[in-house]
Structures are given as structure tokens and as C-alpha cells.
Amino acid sequence: MKTGTPSGVNPSVKRDRHDRGLRGPALPHSAPSHESSDQFFVREMREAVEDLDARLGTMLTSIKFVLEEIPNKRDLTFASGHVPLGRIDQGNPTAIVLYQRPIEMRSDSKELLQRVVRDVLAELVSLVTGLRPDDVDPNYEGPEIRS
Image (cartoon, rainbow, N blue to C red; front, side):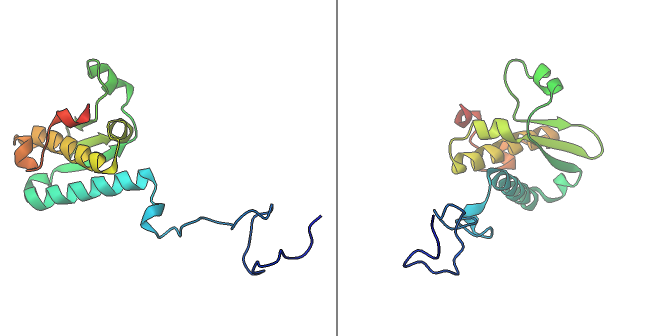
């Protein structure tokens, strides 16, 4: 049975109950590396919407942006054999909904995730506003990157 402090170890540093390592997270919660995939997705969506707002201004005043984790059964029924990445709910205000998990599944890197989020938003906003997707987002790459 162990008693006392192992040699060379500062007694003020807390270790786990098996004396194998430090207690707590390896990184502080404020560090950028500590961001979860959900937090990253929300941040990317927010930044993309802010960019659209700066570019299109008053055209987006009647549009609400919403995030859902997965498509509902109704959306899957109308999707004709593929999983949708988003939808438009007509109303006052009109809602543009992005589906987080299907977008993440089509993105194998953070850079591709950023691009897919922006492209899907450009496509959905173009349907609402009547603009072309490349007019909504000049960096629009199209659905080819999502395969």
C-alpha cells in the first residue's frame, strides 16, 4: 500500500485516484482547441450568416436561420432518395434550416465543413431571394464538393 507522496512530485498537484495523471482537462475550456464539433458548427454557421448579412443586407431581414441536428421524417420522405442538407420553411419570417449531422458527414475536414455550410446557405438563400448561388456567395463551389 502506498503512503505519502512519490519522490519528485509536487504535493500540491492533484492527481487521479490511481496516481496516473493530472485531474481535469488537458486544455483549459477557454482554449480554441477545446471547442466541440457542435460548437465549431454553430460558430461556422453564425460566421457564414454574418457574411451573408454584410453582403446582402436588407434582403435577409425577413429570413430566420435555424440549425437542426437531423432532418425530420417529412423531409426525408420528400427528399427523393438522398438526405437533405437543409430546407426552407415559408412563413413570416421565412426560415432557412441547416441539418448539422448530414453536413458533417459530407465533410472530412474543418475547411470542407466551412465550405459546405456556406454553399448550402448560398443555395437556400438563392431560392428565397431569386438570386443565383454564386451571386449570394462569390466563392460558391457547388454540390460537386459534397460527394
